[in-house]
Amino acid sequence: MTTQTVGLVSVAVPWFDAETAARRLTETRQALETSFTVVGPDRLIMTADDLEDVIPSLAQVDVLVLQIGTFPDGNAPARLAEALRVPIVVHSLPEPSLDRGVPLNSLCGANMSTFTLNALEHPHSFVHADPTVGDDMARLAQHVHAGLSLAGLRGQRLSLVGFRAPGFYPCAFDELLLRRWLGVRIEHIDLHEIFTRLDQGLRSKARQDRFPTIEGGELSNEAIEWIERYYGALSGLLSDGAHDLIAIKDWPEIEHFDDAVPGGFWPALGWAQDDGVDVAPEGDVNGAVTMRIASDISVDPPFFADISAFDEKTSTFTLWHYGGATRLARDPDEIRFGAEGREVEFTLKPGPAHLIRLGLHEGGLRMLSIAVQILDERVTLRRAGATARTEAPAGEIVRHMLDNGWEHHVTLAYGDLAEAVRAFAKQAGIPLTEF
Image (cartoon, rainbow, N blue to C red; front, side):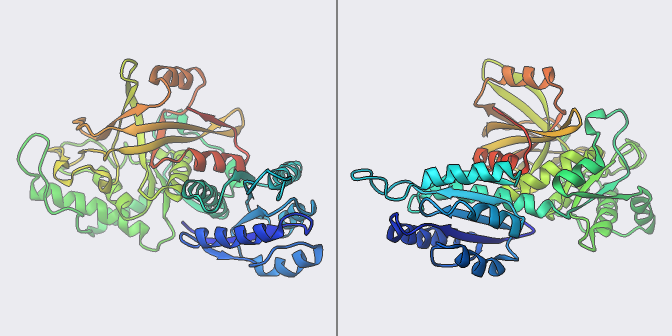
């Protein structure tokens, strides 16, 4: 995450239950502070003068949680949007009781606020959450993470090494569209930057001590030396820290399938992922941006994947690809290398996850989100792979993707992230298709 500062403001008017609203503000701050640096007033904002007084203290926030403590002054959302120009999470509060009236009228105030923000075309999302309920606050946190991701993309430099793999038209991108819509700027780097470092012969030590092969036995010392040379070339490019989001044309120039070279480039891509760099193979720029979003909303590294098979009876996908972080292996002892030193095989760890894709469509952007469960079943596909059970029928999802021309690369992000993906799409103003 590139930014972590969250603003919290609760707006109210005195003719509703301000005492309860103030207590909810304290509870919300305490809950958010377990995950974020939170700034903002610890009192309710009830007047226009109060609001103007606190705006300077919010100048450095990356996301604002606008809590509707009670039905508010309707000018507050517009003023905060204009002054701060950051994503806003509108947070309404459940009523403490409806026995004798409506104490807060927070939901109605949120409705008024979201209307205003929609009309202003300001990035925002909405969550209705009780700050004393753990699941509710987890949903609010997902909205905050989504906002931080969107804010972090502003000014983000994406390093495109080479171009895209030949014929991989789904890896097409619109450079100015990404810059205008998400603030991502692309730096073009020639492939010779990798080859120059390869020629220098610099090596970076492999992230593993054992190299069992898929075929049986161990990799040769010569193969390991070549892999470390490739890793050294890539690490040298990344060494200044400026290239932490990459799309790379890794074949046919670098990974050239030459049997005379007993080691390959692909293990280095996975180790770069282990090092915390988001790397999209095959020059997939939008895939790289998707990986960064996934990194921001999940605690685990993302996995760049193909959906290579599906089973309608079990409603499962087969996922696989090269370049995956070995940290995602369900068992480090299952990691195997191809005898030629190019392929790395392991099974992804089990758990809830989402498949996400930021795609290019009809001159704009769109997003896809598919809820899955990665099963605890070993796969042996000469790549990193997994069996993913889908919540929606797998066949229906595949037909939708093919009928509607979705890209063939998706990003696997671990966690129950439906709310976060939904919040990101809403805040970014990107149409979302969910399964």
